[in-house]
Every structure is written in C-alpha cells, then in structure tokens.
Image 1 (tube, rainbow, N blue to C red):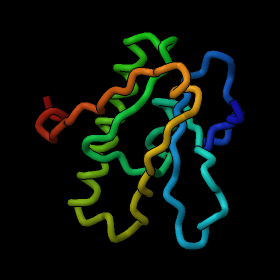
Image 2: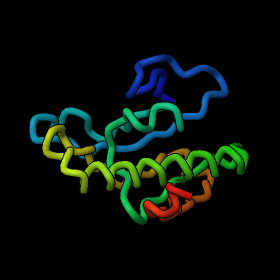
Image 3: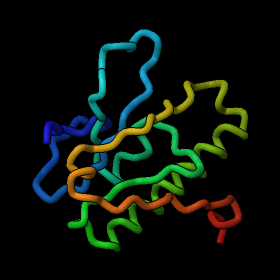
Length: 131
C-alpha cells in the first residue's frame, strides 16, 4: 500500500498499526490536486483530528484479518465522533471553526478484490453517551 504516514499526526505507521483510509471531498482550491488518493490515519487514535465528517449511515470496510474486538472499537469511536460533531454543530461553536470535511464514497481496491466485510457505524444518541 502507498500509505506510509498518518494524514492527521504525520507519524509513520508501524507494522501491525491499525489504520483507516478515506477519500476527501476536495475544497475548491484543491479540485484536481488529490485525485482519488485516500488519506490514511491511525484509528481510533487520530480519528478526532482527521477532520472528516462522520454521517449517519456511513459504513466501513474491514480487512478479514482485523479481529472483531478491533472492529467494534473502531466502530464505537466513529459513532462517538459523529455524536461529538453533532453536539459541536448544534452548540453554536460551529461558526467559530471550519466544519469537518465530507468524506466521499471510496472503495479500496484490495478490499474489493478480497471481499472485505462492510459494517455500518452504530447510530448513537446523546442519551447513549451519558449512560
């Protein structure tokens, strides 16, 4: 794979490090600059600072070599990130900082060839976060 360092923290990925790739929706000034190159990040560690929006109904593909407990951990962190983004948006703080960027649908070619399972991010509410 062509992903050697994290797009959020810029540290190199070590062997065995769990990482996630996603395709960014380019801003007007980036149009045509990135092409279809995904951004790779450490997960769940760098998810909050990666700057992409997690939306209801988003799905994630996992290598068959990723154990279920790791998949669950990543899905829970993605659900928590979506909830944090909703709270931020409704709190009024959203006018003080740029909004997270939309990720666009992207399919990792290796995932397509190997038939990776694709799982939905759990739908959490503020009540779930308090419990």
